[in-house]
Image 1 (spheres, rainbow, N blue to C red):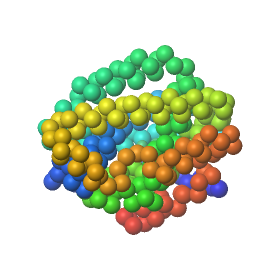
Image 2 (image 1 turned 90 degrees about the vertical axis):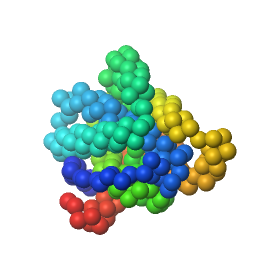
Image 3 (image 1 turned 120 degrees about the vertical axis):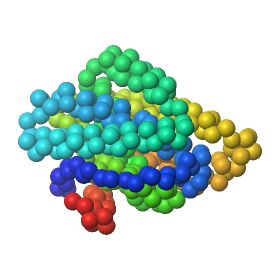
Image 4 (image 1 turned 30 degrees about the vertical axis):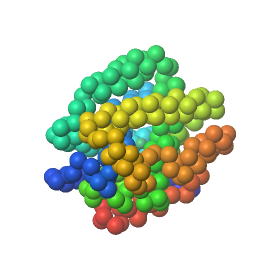
Length: 265
Ligand SMILES: [Fe+2]
Ligand SMILES: [Fe+2]
């Protein structure tokens, strides 16, 4: 399968009248997604750092070009989600304390302790997870009830995650490729994502001060929320196969369709 060019696209989203519960009016679904917004900027800067350490060991000029496109895309994603963090603050949510602890634990304590190959392996795993979530965003209609600008932000991010889904993987294969290390990266990355996103979502939800009854009702009526859709679960299972490669899932056409519908490059 031929790999697409990795092209950063600067987008604009109008959040001027973003409601607090922008995911179908549901607090639980909204904060599950807000929990990701909060994690993305630091997470994506970590992905860039982890891959950059190995740039000097890559000989293939085509892969080098895709890596540069990957850096540019992730940098723009980080900025876009940073903007959403500011929006959350403008809505009255307190997020800075959580961000400080998250940054300290994940990137000031854990990251320096791990060898560079481990950071790369965690990046490869989390890149696969974001690509699975991206696929789910397109095929499962998960964003159908989201506020339009937020839906557009997630679909833009999803399209680019699909476009660069094999970049970190190809770097890992070129410089290391050990199966057990790739799997360990998934176990660490998945646990980290689960713990931090759950804590972030719960902290935001608590700030809404919903009554117990209202919270129960919101949980019941939450539509297609949660990260672990059947598409994502199948993607994670796939990752454990020894011969796995992200390009085995034929979905690059989603990027072209998304771009054509919005008349972007
Ligand atoms: Fe991204
Ligand atoms: Fe990515």
